[in-house]
Length: 423
Image (cartoon, rainbow, N blue to C red):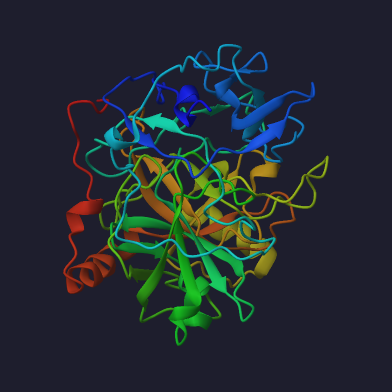
């Protein structure tokens, strides 16, 4: 039988069409299926299937709303073998394959069945793909066109695969050893993430029950081209002046058990200078939280990382709005900043706690500062209410102190303008 290599894609366009010296991300096994025409086929990524036949001439586009077939995964297609299946598209001898770029000192944890996490094992079959080497330098690099593929007709506020590579998901390991999604966060160093104290407070004496997932995109599948990584928390730092009721200083740092290898889908975000203000900048937020219940038509549960476009509200504007909702004596603490959603369906909601909110470091350069973390809102199911974020710049000195105390490098998240950045 012809080897698996006959359908390896030898060149793959990454984001803006860059072709580089490629690394192979190996699959676990061939997965056979039956096509809609009753032919024997193999499960491959959508873009590897052209006209119902495995091909290397696809346009790297994925229709995530295409009806499921025998592969039972919206990223995949059951695709027939080429007629001349004995003539491989490209042979890659197993002895010549390089290590995948997703190698890491971390050990992937098993993913038991739970509807709030992937209920498929990490060892699920995954087609071979060829991925350019990771050569990104500096923090805050976004992948605006996605990694490896892009979503076809993306009109539902979903992020592209790997678009915001610093976004992390925090899970709770339950007594039944299932994985329950708790909140979001952002990678600020290869061994540290930033999230909210409100996310971690109830776990402060039981850190071992939490798992950090990096490189996640769609929680309904583990068949993304580059496997995600799960790692343990070593310790957490809650801000010493965190107010459990008021949510003042709602920020926390997680020190990871392992140092993470950066990849196209795992990266570090930049932090803004201490005391800086996003002023009237647009803010982009991402998270796996629920879609507000006033959105029509009703949507399925959010499994793909969504993104929201918001406008910054001045402290005075936000306080004035919140006083109408919470009483005329309400005082908005300076550890918060506020934003309003441009579109109602993008409003952050339940499950978005700790999720990162960013502005560009320089307009048009696709490098980002983490300006806020989703903290609270008056009512996410009520239109017109502001979203309240933890002000990262306000806490920059505390963050630096903790990072230095852990012998980590603050330069990992400090932005330095490069020649390629827009002026």
